[in-house]
Image (cartoon, rainbow, N blue to C red; front, side, top):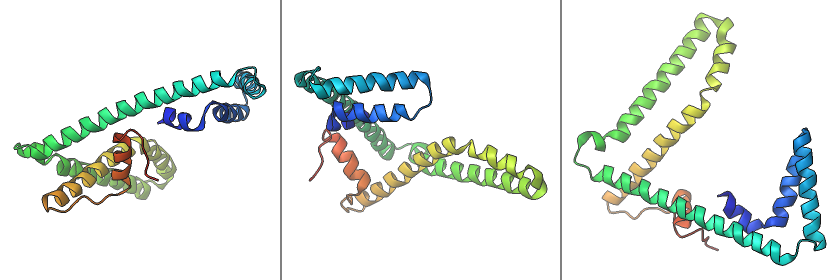
Length: 187
């Protein structure tokens, strides 16, 4: 996704943004990098680096964006294929994997919240320590809940398709469609 953004904004804007960001960091290495970037930006601005060289750099970034888009498209195709295989499977466990995962997530969440509530009630002096420790689990919960959200979304879509309804275009469907079509956006 980053190369796609870079391809749209171009090298001069990127240099200005990165240089400004590095200027904000209080470190000799970042200060030196910011100075070097400012020198490159000045060379682009005064023509020391010719415009055709900048255009060539922009084309390179566009090519990187195209390659990344292709990789992302392949990954989405593989995920879609595996979800379709799961839905079509005759194996009862494979078909029930999404609800099983949902129940496991719910029970784990309940156990964690129950344990936290118990500690807060039973030993209030430890409440701050427990709540701080709980924030460390934020990343793992966000991954698990994201997977569960995708499962729920896909199951809802499966039910619409099974009922004969057309899939309702939503922001996720539009994003996936844009990525699969190579990054084209409707205007």
